Length: 286
Length: 349
Image (cartoon, rainbow over all chains, first blue to last red; front, side, top):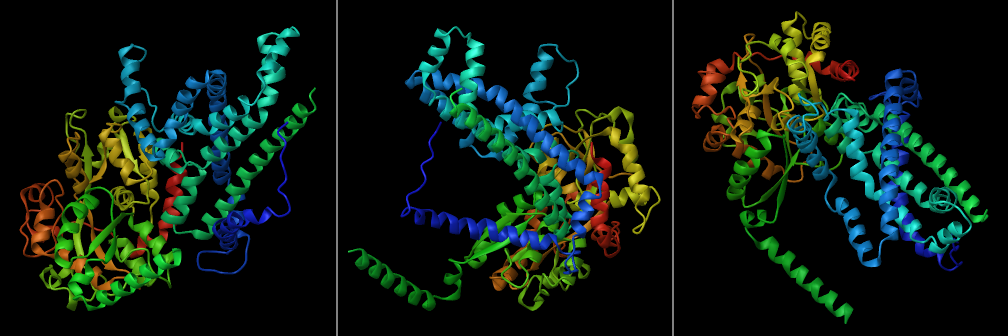
């Protein structure tokens, strides 16, 4: 559907500055990380895969990897469920309202993630806004734990990362020709049928892009995970931090980082495959 | 025209550099910036509000204070080893001093350049860097929720406090010292932490939150997320001054403490300013200010009399200070990694 124009032969040097930055600031450090992870121990410089063996030989580590992935998946699903309708409303709103709505969607990213997370601590705390409301409505007698629970982390992650879902969705949704919906209706399809057969397939690229952004942001959200989840809910970023800073075990921290990066990349690759398939599907015009 | 402007700038810059060399040292220091590490909580507040202005007045230089735990500083200095360290002044707790000295991350303190050094009690005149204070831990509790003040660490196990007890991860010295003290009370020693973990397991049903860092630990109290927990005397005093409902009690097993010290990092960018900064911290007038509420930082300068808050809770005389129990960190340090790992496994939900 969206035609990607390949750069002309004489335009590719324009990408060089970014490529250079990428090599210096990402590829090179990643190679250092990889080399470090292959050290036998904190003092031993000998080549060894001991750190990886240690990681995969221990269900504690695998459990953390899985709970981090599962956490990010759930937060992403919450973003889809709540973000899609918002994006849809935005894309269908009159131009004047659209800019207001987009501004409201973007508003959260104008403040630092630390500030947003601390605001959530005030909301979710034992004596916080949420518990006050629940008690005032007599839904609960005693304050219920919200902070330092996985549910709390998911809710906060979903709110904090929501713009990353809504913006790409909005971009694809507003590019869909409204006539297609009318055509579908004229041919006798109901609203839901039109949604599932026309709108959803056409918006898949935006949905996939949003999922990739939200998933990777949630999986690696050190600040939100540690401040809302505390030290009892150990996810990969905190695990890496504790090994590197608390325990001073850099080779192991490096190995966990590499494993984590690869795990996130696998999920992104899988999402991209889904995106690619649906793109072909939508492109066929079936 | 473009080249004209740049040439003019270049000349101006050259003249500036020439003038700069002619300025007396004091004026030249004005453009210099020292980078000093500080701890979260009471420490960064005292350092920002008292020490930084004092240092500016004394040297004319400015100081950037960066909040980091001792373990974080060790990790960063280790990473920068051989090159320029990310900060000139390190603030370390007793256990980390042994590591930092062993790994060559700090320089021996040039006492001769530091006029206030000789005023410290002899026990605090460490060759690696002067001890600036003593930190002690006991029990913090919320007097609004807990009417009978706790008297011992065993009170943390009281079933009435289910979900109301707070802990902090072992990356902070508070977490590590509490674990060591719990271990000692339950019959363990520096080489056997089994009793501590057994006690921790029994405590877990009561634990409502384990803060990943000390900043989050303070938030737990501010939000009244926890009612009772091991805590530093200073941190309690600072929070109390902010209107947070928290009180400090000395458990029947006594106070546990450790010294905190300042150090010039190896290859520091501004070694002389670093010494001036550290020496400022040792000055009698500075330590007297820091001893006042809301900081209540225990002085190490022999010319500074103890204030009432400290005398009531911690020590009646300076001699009492030396009776506060510590641990043999040289024995505990090598186990740190294993202890952190085990703690994480056993507290994980």
